[in-house]
Length: 173
View 1 (cartoon, rainbow, N blue to C red):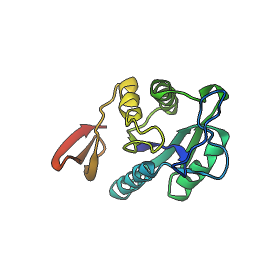
View 2 (view 1 turned 30 degrees about the vertical axis):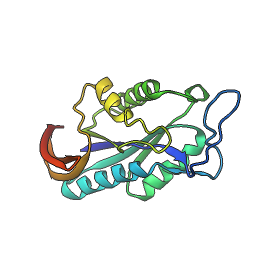
View 3 (view 1 turned 45 degrees about the vertical axis):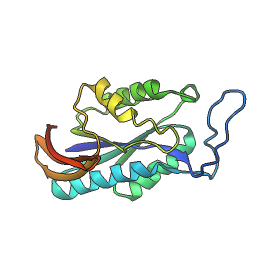
């Protein structure tokens, strides 16, 4: 089984600096960290790895060269492989451009069973990259996953929770 976790480097503060010429966030320097919600995504992948044998977890991020730090962190958490997609032309990419780019890299990685994303990012806060990546890939999207119930070679069963309403969903891998 191959799991791809999408992660992002975000500012480690509520005070962000913006380039006055481009309007883009300045992400270089020591004031960055892995998006906290993506830590849950990696942890979820590791839980699946404990439940199912022969699982390979890959982390993927799009960002500046400094984003390699979050990939290193993902490797220290148990991911076996990590990919950085970087180009100055990606600076200031909106949700649609980011989702499309990430989906194309996921297609290149190929032969994946699950793509896991954190709920949202602390810098953009749109919560739309995951659903849009799923749309570009033509795969099911399950939001607000609370628990992994069961994993087999062909299906995953999860508990989702939204506004105190829980339901169990089963999705084909």
